[in-house]
Length: 146
Image 1 (cartoon, rainbow, N blue to C red):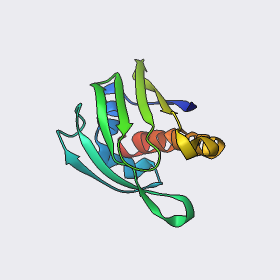
Image 2 (image 1 turned 180 degrees about the vertical axis):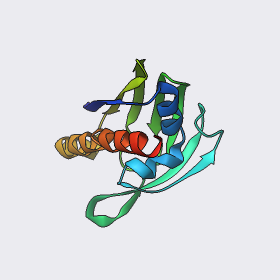
Image 3 (image 1 turned 135 degrees about the vertical axis):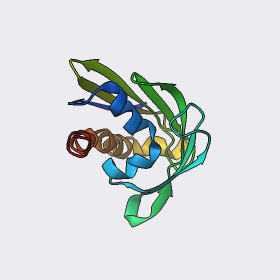
Image 4 (image 1 turned 60 degrees about the vertical axis):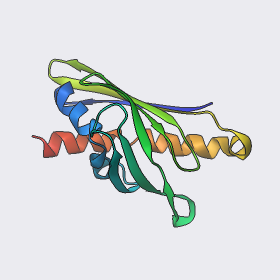
């Protein structure tokens, strides 16, 4: 199984961080690989919401990266499952607030199958890059929501 995670402390309350993460339309603001995103079905930020997303792929091609929110606990946890595209990881954002600052842990997991098993190191590197974007999330939330 491929796994990557990262953690950052953001000087904002957990409910503010959660609201920003739960609104999938914000992903383009802090994840540069996301090229387009739209709410495809369901209520924004709620369990069952599906977001249609295209991402930068290998060789400059765009690839599908649609995902569904599978768990939504406001201020605490947001889990998703990628439902379209060549790789379909599961992911979670876990939030913990202390003294007005929120620790955010972003984790991705993928069980490669078939041909993808041969691409394990490349998949892990891509996943590590994705969770590494938490620094950009921190910068945006602390700068733009000041």
